[in-house]
Length: 422
Image (cartoon, rainbow, N blue to C red; front, side, top):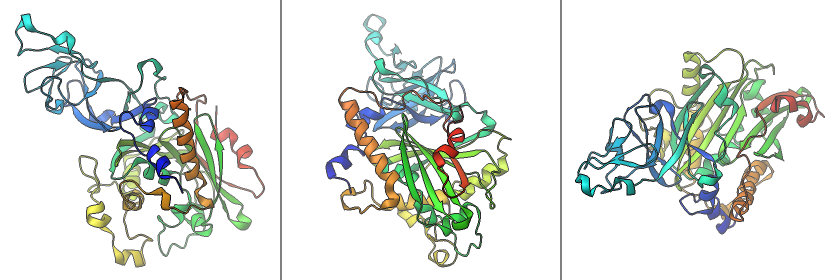
């Protein structure tokens, strides 16, 4: 249970809000680099932390992230011509560079020109790992550019997509750190397997959670007791303010068969909409084949026909996520196709912003509680003039890991070298 006041504090992200001020201290994903495929390509709209923005790549290949509306008569710069190192508004021809400076006013007489006095809000932009990032906070506190392991692996070893989810960002993040739900929400009916992740999550449906606070957020383990087989330990990471990673590595008998990690970035577009950046990367071995990517995307409900060109899902609240009641009886626990579609359905079903004053949390919700306490603590630290954690990652590599461990073995010691393989 959370008080109404604290619930407001950790869900509202617009300009001037406490959480919005905290998030603006970090580099924030605003687009995929592939959305701006080349110099002078078409600009795109994007919305982050309640702000309507336009992103573009200029003639020299530099990326600009500006407020969407022209300073003259407020026409949208999404309609602008991207030409000769700037965006030119189609209404009266005013032109802006990547820094937001107005560099031309062709509808004004030369002796009356006042372009040097006009500047749009522009955010510092960088590209890393196939993502365009913007820094939207105070100019005197810009942290180093993003430097996650997945941003440094070869392009052949990572795959990133986007999906719009229609609820508050925190509902999505809390789903991302909730390990227990996979035993139910993502369960297939009639699955006879007893080993591997599928079998283990059905055999041990109430994992014990252990949370370790870190200088970037926290690491936590979901521990499933498999009896004589030992403990299946799945170690996740929450990196402030909206990053999660989890492993997907073990086969049916517990052997490691691929050095692969999945994750999400839950980026608030506004108070009631979140952009999910879906991550998949390998830190060794061979890169991804297209057939494997297609298989994984289909499994998660992001295959052909599952998502529109604007990143919105075909399965949504308006059509009840296309739930199939017959399949719910015979094929899957939910009757909803696609692992991530199942996540989105339950999170969107809670409403735009869930009323956490009416919850009854249990022992399997420790990571959810840890997220809320971390956010509240860091919001108050920033309000008091301090710096939030994770602005600079002190570890070169932070890896999510899953292992089958003997009973009595402490996962912290057994997996330390794999979780932080510096």
